[in-house]
Length: 208
Image (cartoon, rainbow, N blue to C red):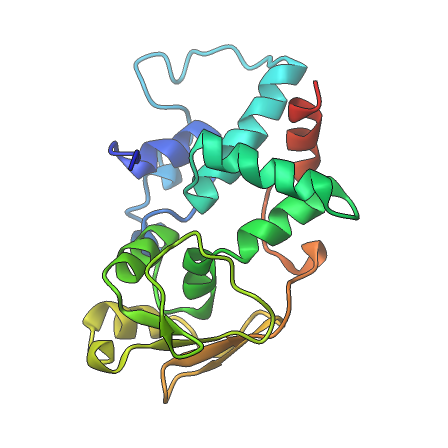
């Protein structure tokens, strides 16, 4: 499986905003974006600021892909699926991405980043509706219950991540810290998703 192997902090610098790819480090002063808010590379500070319409659209697509940790082929497939659904294509796309298993685990607070969520899922630490699921891209449905597997309830990674979660901050999710479980109540509306990106530009890019 193809994956990104370079420093994820460079991805944030390329987009000139925090993409929250590094977990707890993103919430500290050690985050490189705090003092290096310019693209990486020797010409990072000297690059021209004027960007074409295509360049702006491309950056939005790259930003969303990197936030959710998805490569081009898979992202394009999500777009095609969103385009076939009723409603606004861009909003459908965001809603599909929010239903990914790794994203739901991250939103529930069981992982400090989507990348860590993928690792935990692949290592079989979670069950969905009492069934083991180890596919990060698995799409969670309304009413699904996600639980930490009994043998995994003492994992420091999960407990350390949960420390930053005071209560469920998303109205489409509920979490029970005592039992280390959560419920996906419904597919979120776009207005409820904290995503600092313009998905409509992605639609325009793929529609050319």
